[in-house]
Image (cartoon, rainbow, N blue to C red; front, side, top):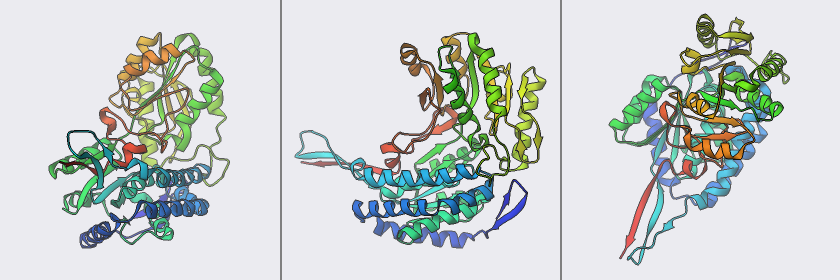
Length: 449
């Protein structure tokens, strides 16, 4: 299992995959750890996650560099990712006790209500684009609820996975509470079918999600899926143009555009389209591309050459079908220039498909009704951003949008305090907030006569 630096194509880390026998031993150890961990007090769990937060902060430079070397994330953004992981640990250390508190419900019983008990060993299947955040977003509430966690990470970020396991060890978690399994994807099905594994959470592609969900369903086990998106950035004529442009830049181009919740479809109202696109073009062309290890780099390389070439194919398809290239478009190795195209129609691939990289596709709309229609034409439903100062418009449009999240005058982002997830082919279930910590618990009804 090799990690190849996409900036210079050099092998930076190598790790050996474990055998199915070793996998089964790890599952047994995780189950045995669960039997003890489930009885651990919330106070003790909180102390350990507070310590984990400190460990992440102390090592953010070192572990940020690992991410940068493995998948090309600009170093400043990689460090910020580790900091965000520390935040989610602090959040649940502070709030998990109240989120998991038993709830009394008045009936004709002496006592009746609901309590929340952990299920057991939970498998997390995680992607490469946010090597630390995706894992901690899954593992923190899952473990805080009293479960234990197994991690199957993407094969190109196994060193990041090892660093996360090291962080749990440094923080003092008992052995088996968090376990990284360096395995190939073919072994995932057998892990889900293991009777000691009680659920699975996956962030990734639709095919991977469908395969995992099918296996989990066949075993009658809960699953949670976050499967990407094609978020719209909807720019109305009354927006604050300067702030909107800055937000759209970050929404599309941070992490070199390789984000499920990136703003990929830019919808601009016709009356301001020319002005907005011209200003946006200037901002895009001012973005600094370069070595991901340079702290001044904002646009790095994509995860590999194949990913860049796939995005270039989507771009070329649009240009061949009438889209207009405003800026960018050049592809060399794993690098694709930050790109803006206009005159994108709803029939084009870059409107219908997820574009996973630094490509922003612009479509013009006339009025609110057309904007809603364009947003909802996507099969994805992870999130949408609206840019307007009209409160009545906001209140009217929010219920009409088939999305897991609506952000107004802000990019769609994950926040430990808010539930995160999508509808349509973006998946089901919710991570983070109280919803996230209740994802893998037994909501046990209690009735005492």
